[in-house]
Image (cartoon, rainbow, N blue to C red):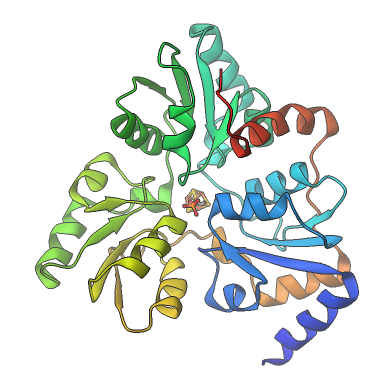
Length: 304
Ligand code: 13P
Ligand code: SF4
């Protein structure tokens, strides 16, 4: 183990801390984490922790969601500037304006959103459970989906529902194009192409499957293919290769890199454990409202 990894382990014990990492984190960050997962797995984990301190290796909205689910814990985001450009595309005011236009609609917000947006939404979803969440909304209800137009469009196609979309998107996944799929299919004939549903509509349609990062891990394990083309942020390749050493994983586009996810480093994890900073908190009034949307997502009753 490296010197810095040893220091992190020692300090983690002294602070009674747990390290959670999203699947897009740097390989060395995933390797030091107590738990790596997709957004839904991390939210579930964050809601049921015994430790006093959570070091969240991901982006701001993820740490914010953890802080709302476990307000009594100290939630640290090792780089306070690790934001999500898509989450920042929609404001609470934008959602309120849409609600004025469609007063009877149920508002579903992708978990990649600010606490202000969650506070004016009825329910959250992640890319793992978006279809299930939409299916829990009565058929006669209108649905507004914020902020990701591509995930919202994918869910509309999967459920056959008419969904009012906000014009947000993930800049990292938007870099992946159909021409990348065409090129890779020529290079690796017969290899399945799996993409994240944050990808452009035409990319989702040209791929074999559109899956969340957690679903990609499960899909890759059960697949009989020896080569799999992966259309998402390249950080996931580390986990796929570690869990399936006998299979070959090829990035659909090697520049699908989220600069924000890559801001978390081992040094910053160590510093944040030393200083118990940067700490992420959510004002109580916002957290109370926003938590309702997150708790509705984690439950299983009808919505709206
Ligand atoms: P999932 O890991 O839930 O698929 O989320 C992808 C993502 O873009 C997180 O920012
Ligand atoms: Fe946001 Fe996209 Fe980065 Fe995920 S990969 S944090 S959605 S910018």
